[in-house]
Amino acid sequence: MKNVLSIQSHVVFGYAGNKSATFPMQLNGIDVWALNTVQFSNHTQYGKWTGMVIPHQQIPEIVNGIDAIGALKHCDAVVSGYIGSPDQVDEIIKAFHQVKARNPNAVYLCDPVMGNEEKGCVVAAGVREKLIEVALPHADIITPNLFELQQLSGLDVTHFEQAVQAVQHLLTKGPKMVVVKHLGSASKYQGAFDMLLGTENGVWLLSRPLYQFAKDPVGVGDLTAGLFLANLLNGKSELEAFEQMGNAVNEVMEITYNLGSYELQLIEARHAIMNPKAQFSAEKVA
Image (cartoon, rainbow, N blue to C red):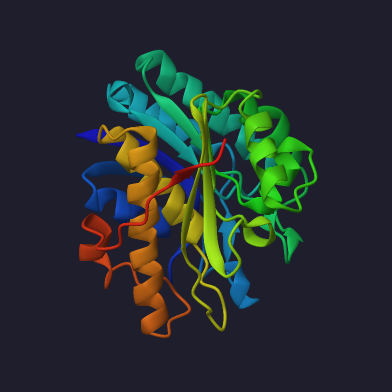
């Protein structure tokens, strides 16, 4: 069994952060050690919520506790998602290197949650800079959306060819794999939901249906990153992991859309996550 230390947000009601990533990874046979950066009543796109940012000191305290019982050597990957304060970024990187000292084969997936095209940067002051300057160089895998791709690369991305170039640029900054979770306005195919995978072997595009929600569900990026990592840890190739993830996420979105839900319907989609019926294939574009 593979084990993942997942350092993300937590919501009590609904699905975002660890609530969105943990169950799908577990369905794929991954044991998830969830460490929360914030604990909120619900995700922030409702416009009101209660809860708190977890003090950054909790990250090393929890990781040291796991290390003290000799379990850290069994950690195969660290994931970071929504981060509540810039100090948490420093502690996450320290935690990853602590894991790496116990298991040299461990990898770090950074989901650089900052915001999106419509809302701009929505994280606490200083988090964006820390993600770019501290987290990016240490990440083995990074999973930005279009807005985050522009922030991380420092490049303007207004059309598909520029998105491919930005992915190639990010591969020179440290990560071995880049997954663009949603190309948005830079999509190649109008009216589709386009994603990119970039590695040293090339860049691939996966295009699936774009569901027209009245309000787009939150947590799709967390689901995407978690499933991609789970597939890699289960021995799939980079391309196989990308395609399997894209098809599984499509199943979740289709079921959520058909049920008219604002929250991801992960429980209802549990069988489809494990065995998606969709068979969308990626095409090599660079």
